[in-house]
Image (cartoon, rainbow, N blue to C red; front, top):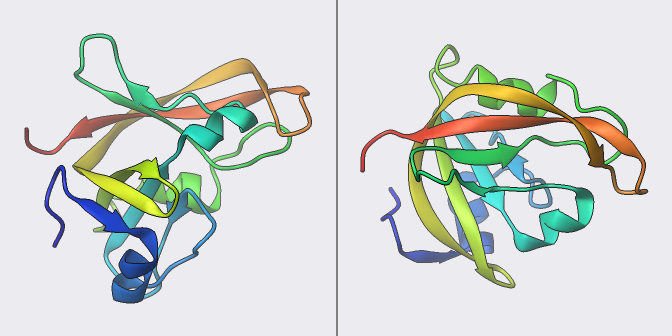
Length: 136
């Protein structure tokens, strides 16, 4: 469906699959996919997405801009994507409206990270997923 390394317009991805256009974690109704969109803008909200130092895992911060993150909605969809029979696809923003397809991932657990600022600057506990590429 998507080619690793190729850029896609986010609007085109939503035209093809549907789903929430503003969220970082997208769960298109009636589709067996969960789409993850990482953006440098996320740092404004305390998100620290990116590859581990050894390059084996991708750390992806869960959803929720205020208060402690919870394992509900999109966060639950990421954690339970295999049980739900959904493929997890990761995209990184390259410029406004454009995202490079990283590839299909699997959730390999998560960490609770205390002290991550929320949108209002208050410390909270964030959920940070450890994602592993399905194939490299």
